[in-house]
Length: 185
Image (cartoon, rainbow, N blue to C red):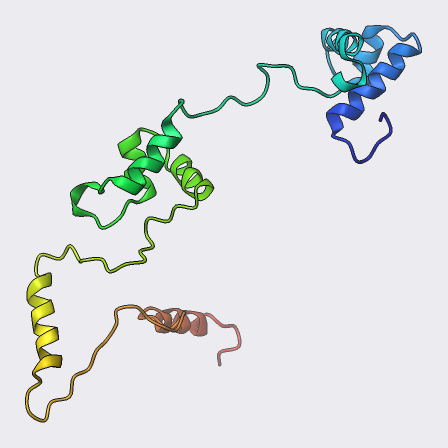
């Protein structure tokens, strides 16, 4: 255990310290060699006496990072994400709007969503737009398909670009990189 390269470092250091204690070294000397305080060595020795090798490398209760969220916060975020509509007529929750609603950080919301496989921005059913002129636009578009004008051609353009890197700004990026080259005459 004291020479292991597979066990956690904490466990190896404590095992090595206990071996030195078994050889009769003083707590202060063990602490100096281990890079800890002599009180820490005393705690290691007493834990070893109480629990044996099972107590080596164990972190005492109350130590370590404390949970950052109050009890019930995770369940409330999950419930609100699934059941409540976001404020301001938004179509889905964002990490920032949910964080503001719950009074926690956006990274905490993102972690909760990832842990529960929640993706409020993805919708598996039809979603109505929150555009105030949506109904008028829908009637116009459907009307073109149902009753097209004589000898008319109807084109449909999607706002999303199917080719990554071929957006409206890609030409600007290409021009800037070409202009900055050293091999220009």
